Length: 278
Image (spheres, rainbow, N blue to C red):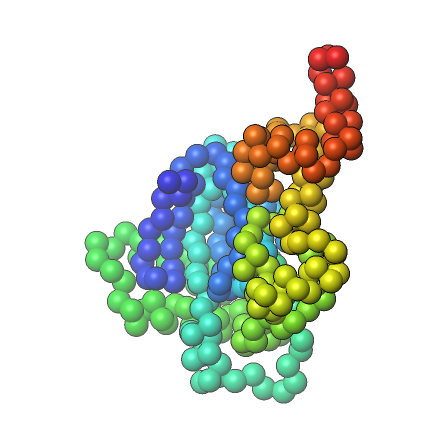
């Protein structure tokens, strides 16, 4: 187990990384409000890369493909308090406190909140609750989450609009989405859901656009990406094969020798030459 996690409520937790480094690719079902107490967190999405340090507070939007890299830093573990802002809670909140005036178009991006006293106080007040012998009463947990939502919507109208948006992913441009997100190690079910299609429709639309199957296209794109990072960036082969869903180096060798042919052989020639193996 990579994290030691302590819950005071189903939607409020304290997580501590047991080692020095951990990386994962996820798509959060709910918005996540994070207070990074110590350590470092790198968040990578299709539109950019964000690096956070101790005492940073940030919001991760739901239904966005995200690579999360957690590191210990300065002799301190990666430690964070995380609050899940579930759709159920947000619907109930906005039913009582609807947005007034025009609603700006929500931006599904990572929000960073710098030195905001109300938000810092709200999250810091949770720490003593993790020392309780019993569970935190549900009413108190609900009050703390409502407090956080109220502060967030006060800070930024874009955040308020994001939290008040409950739309499911609609049918979007498949070519653009796949070119931006192919490196994320997900099932075809998730790709189809995020593009607003059934699995059968996703397969059909994909073949019309790319003239091949999704599985074959994804494998070749990830192989090309892995070879680039191994040959040009001198990255570890094992880490590359794991990161982009190639499972094992054996899978990597099998596909590369059969699927990409001469191009990939030339990559290995570059590596061997650099390492004095030829």
